[in-house]
Length: 186
Image 1 (cartoon, one colour):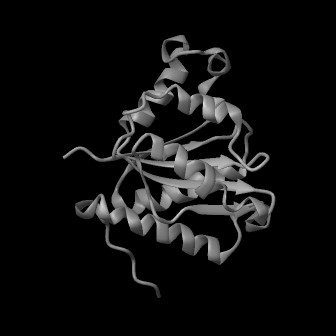
Image 2: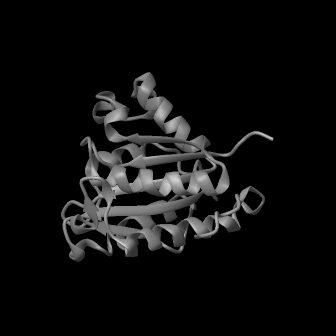
Image 3: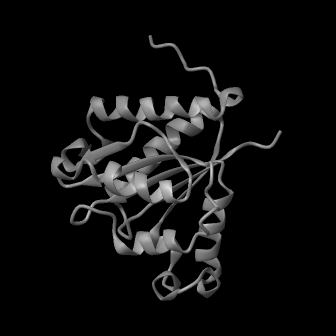
C-alpha cells in the first residue's frame, strides 16, 4: 500500500520564518503519527513566476510542481503569517491558481503566526473561509502562534505544543488505519 502524502505550505516568502517553523512542527508530528511522506514548501519555492502568473499555465515548472503537490496531497498543513489582519497577497495569489474543486474533501490543518494576540482570529476569519470555498475539511482545531511562542530553536511554549497535538489527533478521523502507536511517556 503506497504511503499517504502530507504537503505543508507556509505562506511566507521569508526564510527562516515562524510560519514555516509552525508548519514544519505540525507536519513532523503528523508524519510520525500517521506515517505520511511529507514535503514542505514556502512561497520562495514557487519562484518568480508566481507573481507574474495570471493562470496555472503561466507558472514555471517549479511553481506548477508546488501546486500539483498541493492538489495531490492526502492532507495539507497550511500556515500563513498575518499582515494587517489577513494572509499576504502572494499567498492568496498562489491559492487563486488552484482549481476550485481540486481541494474538495481534503483535510487541512490551518495555522497562522503573528506579532501578538490581536491577530489570533485570523485562522477563523480568513483561512477557514478561504478553504471552505474549496470545500476542503479544515480541522476543528486551528493553530495560532504569536512571536512570544517561539525561541531561536523553534516552538517555546507547552500550550502551543498541546494545541498542535490536538489538531494532529483530529486527523485520525480521516486516516484511522494509518495511526502509529504513540510512545508511552516515561
